[in-house]
Each structure stands twice: as C-alpha cells, then as structure tokens.
Amino acid sequence: MTVRRTLALVLLACAWGTRTDVAHAQQYLIGGSIAASSGVEGGGAQNALARTRTRLRIGGDVRIDESPDDIFEFAAIAEVEPRSGFGADIRYARAAGDRFVVDVGLLGIVAPASLYGACASFYYRLPISKRTQIVVGPEADFFFLGSDLPDGTVLWELRLQGGLRVDL
Amino acid sequence: MSTSDRVRYALIAVFIVAGAASGCGAVSDCMRYSDCDPGLTCAYGSCVFPPQQDGATGDDGNNIGFDPGTTAPGDSGAGFVVSAEAGSGFVVTPDSGFVVNGSGSDAGIANTDAPAE
Image: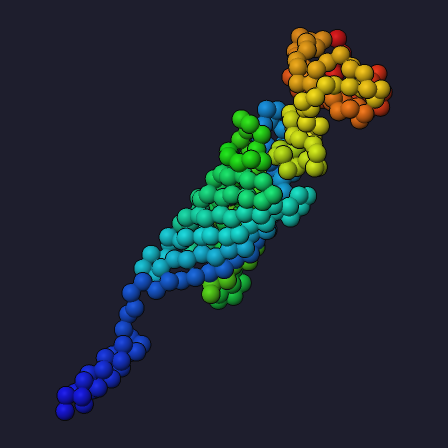
C-alpha cells in the first residue's frame, strides 16, 4: 500500500512538473553571431592613422528571460588581413529598445603577440526572420597593454561591423 | 523619421567620419610590432631595423662613425639615433620624426625625408 502511494505521488509530481502552463525559473536565452569589421586605427607618438586589420568575430550571447535586456556576450576574434591575429572578448550588453544594443567589454589579442584593451559598440538588429537578424553598427576599441604595443602607446580603433545573429 | 532612415543616416555618418579620418594625418606603416615583417621593429610609425648592440660598421667592415643607439644632433637641433647592421646598410631614426633607411655603401643614404636646413 505504501509503495502504491509513493508511486502515485511520484507520478503526480512528474505530471505536475511537465505541465506546459507551469512557469520555469530563469530560462536561459542563447544566441550566436558572426560578424566582420574593419575601419581606421591611430595612436602612437605621431598620432598617425592607418586602416585597421579586418576582423572576424564568432561568438554567442546569453541572457535570462526574467531580464532579457541584460546580455552577456563572448566571442573568439580573428584578425585576417593584412596581418593575422587571434583573441577573444567578453562584453556586457544592454538592449536599448527592440532593435538597438549597446555594449562595453574587454578584449585581447593573444597571438602572435599580446594586446589587451577595452571595447564599446553600438549596433542595430535588423530582423530578417523570426530568429535571425542582421547586425550592423560602429565599434571603438582601445588597446593599452600587451607585448605588441610600443611603449607609451595607446592604440585606438574605430570599426564598422556587420554580421548575422541567430536566436538558438 | 522612420527607424530605417535613422539607420541609413547613421551608417552614412560613420562612413563619412571614417573616410575623413583616413584621409587626414600621416599614414603610418605600423601601429604594432606585429605589423612589421620578421626582423624589423616598429618605431615612429615605420618599420625599421632594430638597433644593434655590437659595433656599427659599413659594407667594408669599417666603423661608420656612430655607435648604435647613440644620439647625435641633427640639423634642426633634434637628435637622431643611428643603428647599423654589418654589411647591410644602416638605419637612422631621428627624434624629430623622420627616418632614413639606407643600404649599400656607407655613403649611400637613400629615402631621405630629412628636412632641409
């Protein structure tokens, strides 16, 4: 009798737990993105300008359904031309409306030489399907640490990036 | 004004700013050490041979009169740094911002951007 009662309670709990109208706490919402960017860079003693390296960024973003406007972003970045380099970035993003997002974060190039700094960007999400958006917007990077940076130099980059984002 | 118009104007503004920025100021060969080919280093926005620690010699092996890494006064009073690589010419990196990158005999200074007196 006790076994039957226990089994019934377990089944009842399972049935309750699988009800579609029961809210789940803090569901994670995940997205993936790929983007390319290029622009101008400057800094150094002469404050000269040059075209910056073209960069590919492949990353993801995570947010929770209870606070969908606060977004944590992370990505691997690869500089592809005229010289190559590899690194990563992490950012905190804040949705400003349905289609605009601003973010700030830290990024670093780790190979072939190190370069570390901060970044900020602003982009617009243009929906092209229910789960897919085109993203485009400017980005500013500032590098102030690393073995690839001449002494006393702060390197800045102003980029225009564009890409694709998918809600996973 | 619709959202798409705002985005269009924002993109146009970004392109104009980027284009204006790239058209102003001196164009640099390098911003980072890794912008230069192997064996070169980035100094004053240009890729140059790194200063050598041994004696400065010309093609004939004779000392050309400057020690690498030393500073000598230029015409305008600004100092410049002379470095040499045995048998492959020498590099002069002035403090005032111009670079002389020569090769050949010790009398052949090429690509001189030094200001005239």
